[in-house]
Amino acid sequence: MSCRLDKDTHALLKQRLEDLGGVSFADFVKDSLGLLQLKIPDIGEIKETAWGEGYDQAEKDCQIWYYCAVCGERIDMSPDSDSHKAMISYMKEHGWGHKSCHEH
Image 1 (cartoon, one colour):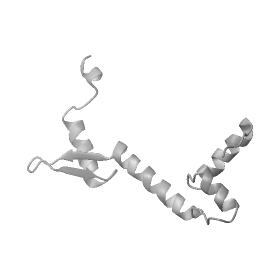
Image 2 (cartoon, rainbow, N blue to C red):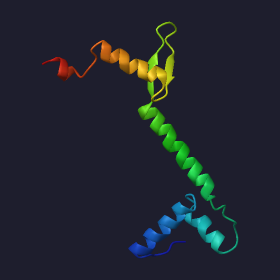
Image 3 (cartoon, rainbow, N blue to C red):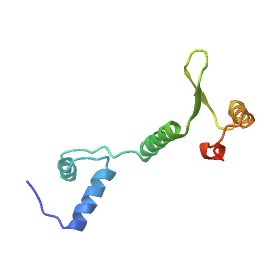
């Protein structure tokens, strides 16, 4: 079975299906006919998932870390922690800077 929809109605239907957690059109129709009970995502679950995914991505992109000189394992650092401040101080004391700044 198929149906014809104008562009605006198709876009609205597509958005509603996404809002319902990506359910199929067939399941949407079955739910409308009372043949299936869709599980509507809980707003708390959505927020928790989105926050967790955002946090994980930010941690991946922005985490401050270095390798242990003894075992070689990664050591993560919290921003503005004592170890982070010590690293900043060490880099300043030992002349770390932009490559372009050292070329002049």
